[in-house]
Image 1 (cartoon, helix red, strand yellow):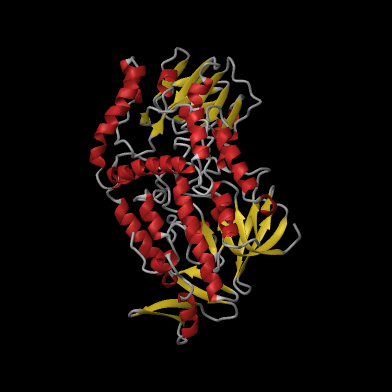
Image 2 (tube, one colour; image 1 turned 45 degrees about the vertical axis):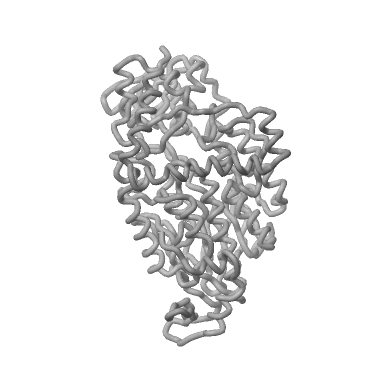
Length: 538
């Protein structure tokens, strides 16, 4: 990469969000872009997480791009190798390889207010971009707990997202820390080979049966030859999950029936009353992420497995001490302790218009406009931003909605013309987040009686979207310029789209009107773009 190369768009990350953004940019006729990837291959979290048993808990035909259907998924819930292969295929099929820069970890991004562009420092040099799309994802940076004495441990230590495939677990005393989505897949996969497996459980999860099966050759043939059958399958899976949303967001008390299924799943495999009591959650199902497994409880019932119903408190040499005083000897510690979700490390590397980092801007909690843009960070957009997560459906649906928002964002920059940037108005960001948090108050994630990774350090849910994917798609169908300051190169003050009666106008703060710019910003929007101008509230 030539030093100080300039591109129209720089995409950060090559997981689902980054590759999806690249495809959408090409479809919009934008080819002057790069995808900056810190690793040596594409795939994001599906490249990094290669632990034994790693698989998706969303059905395969829903956990894929609508514009890149795969008729050959081998199972109803696909494993990590197949999902990673799918992403590699997307990169090839849509001609993305020439745009991808591997081993280009982004170290710092700074907004240049004079030039109206982002200066990006990478491991391989510097480049500039008019627009940055941050698609690093919330599950990209492993989170390790600060356990006293960890440095004194003489055995092997690694995180589930950094699995050491060269380490042989056979006959070893293994300590598994955590009971999240990764842990319930790892435990059944390594239990048969471990000499002793001890699971440190701070809070038991709700685990539902995993209705997984091989997809028959006849099904795959039909989906390949008659594509609408695969599309119909996807829509059915989507519809079922959309119908479930109201119970999570409006009527959590209706989840009791689902809890009874979870309890029955425990009872089928766990006959010991004491162990069954340890594994039965005391909070409303859905408050934490609902997990899927038909092998987790049978593995815990095996004679070489112990469950410590208490978090890890300290380590003394090779002895792990739980909060309840239980002591366990171990040869290897595996942390299944999740990721930096509400404090994403990328935020420390983004420096906005006022010289502050995004992390500083978000010190009281993440917030953005429509899950995409942040005030004070012009022409910067994030994929899977604040309050875009889901508790029961496919994140690919949310990503595709944000890609539509990105496409219209680029169209609006083109319509405005010249060297121009869009900066979300703080009032618009605040209004959006007030509505989101108001809806969040009665959801199961806030009222279910648990503490989850959905909540930030202040106890605020900055992670989950409190509605259906259809609602989010409607809210992100197009960019409302009334929510943005329009910043021009060389201007002392930003231009702001204002509403006066039934008409819009672009004004320079304190400097009168710029009617032709206002008219230009409203032109060229047809179909969904035109309808999107009449914004729906959250």
